[in-house]
Length: 413
Ligand SMILES: Cc1cc2nc3c(=O)[nH]c(=O)nc-3n(C[C@H](O)[C@H](O)[C@H](O)COP(=O)(O)OP(=O)(O)OC[C@H]3O[C@@H](n4cnc5c(N)ncnc54)[C@H](O)[C@@H]3O)c2cc1C
Image 1: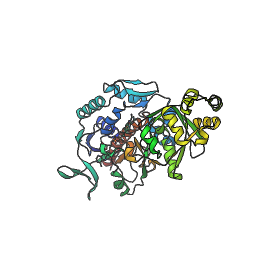
Image 2: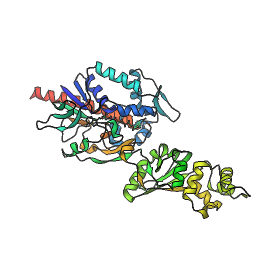
Image 3: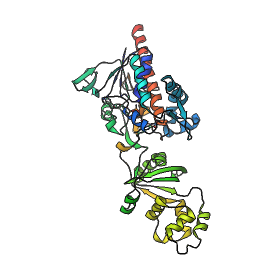
Image 4: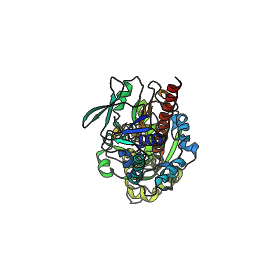
C-alpha cells in the first residue's frame, strides 16, 4: 500500500519513518528544493528538542489543548524522543533551564542522519512538489518544475506546517484547500511572537537591539489571574520580542484581539521591593544627576532607565514613592502582535474536533494531519518540536492502521 506524506518538516519525516518501518511504501513530497528547512533554522538557536520537566508540567504548556495532546505525547514522550535521537547517533543533554538540546547544539547532523536512515528504509523523496489540492478523480495534485502531476495514494499524511517564516516552505497555502473541503480551520495567528509598542524616536534610536535583562513581566489572563514571569527580552525598532515576551505572548495576543490593545507590567528590579526602593531613592541626591541617583540607589541604568523615562511622567520621576512603584510595575501598552510571518510558531489550524484519535480528518477518510498545522500552541522550550514529532508519529501510525483495517475489510468483504 502507498502512503503519501506531504511536508518534510519534523512531523512529516516522523510520519514517514513510522509508516516505512511498518513496511508501507512511502513517498514524501515537499514544495521546497530540500526538506527540513525550518528545523535547520531552529538549529541556529541551539535546537531545543524537548524539556526535562515532569510530564504534568510539560502537558500544562499546551493549555487548552492539553487533553488532546496528552494521549499523543504518551506514545512519544520526551524520553522516547531522546532515545530516538540517540538511535541516530545524536547525544542530548539537559541545560541549566531543564531544556534538552543535542550535544553539538546543531540540527544539521541530526537531519542528515535521519534522512539517510529514511532513504535506506525505502522512503522516496519528491522535492519541488507543491501540493495544490485534489484533481477530479480524487488524486493528489502537485505543481512541479516539469508541470502538474497527479498522484494516487492509499492514504495521505498532511504535515504542511503553520504560517510563520513562509520563505522556509510553510506558507499556509493549505488553508483554502482544506476549507474548500468543508473543514473548519481555526484562524492562523502568530504565537511566540513580538509586539509593537510604538517607541518615541529618541528611545528607538538609542535602544533598539538592546537586551533587557533580569526583569520580570506581570500579565493578567482573561480570567483576571495575574502571573509573574522572570526573564529577559529585546527592544526592537517597533517594540519588544524574544525570551520572556514569547512566554506571555499568547495571553497578550488574545487580549489585543479582544480589546484592541494589551498592557503588560514590567518589574525592573525583581530583587527589591517597593519600600526598599522608596527608602533608597529618598536618600538625598545632592548635586548628582537623577540618572546617577537611580543607578546608585536602585541599580537602574541604561535601557532600564530609558524605559522609565519613556513611560513615567516628569512629576512621577522625581517622586521617590511613585518612581519606586513604577520600577516594580511599569505599564507597557502593546498595540499589536508582529505579523505571523515573523513569529516563531503558529496558533490555530485544523481543530482536533475535526480529527479522530489517530489524527484522521473525520470527513476525509484516509487523510491524516500532523504538526504545526494542527490547532494547538505552546511556548518555546522544546514543546513545539516535541508535539510535531509526536503528532507525526500518531498520524503515521494512524495511516498504517487505517490501511490495515481497510485491507482486512476488503479480504473479509
Ligand atoms: C527561528 C525559529 C526557531 C525555532 N526553534 C525551535 C526550537 O528550538 N525548539 C522547538 O521546539 N521549536 C522551534 N521552532 C519551531 C519548530 O521549528 C516548528 O514548530 C516545526 O518545524 C514545525 O514542524 P512541522 O513539521 O509541523 O512543519 P514545518 O517544519 O514548517 O514543515 C512543513 C513542510 O511542509 C512543506 N509544505 C508546506 N506547504 C506545502 C505544500 N503546499 N506542498 C508541499 N509541501 C509543503 C514545507 O516546505 C515544509 O518543508 C522554531 C521555529 C523558528 C521559526
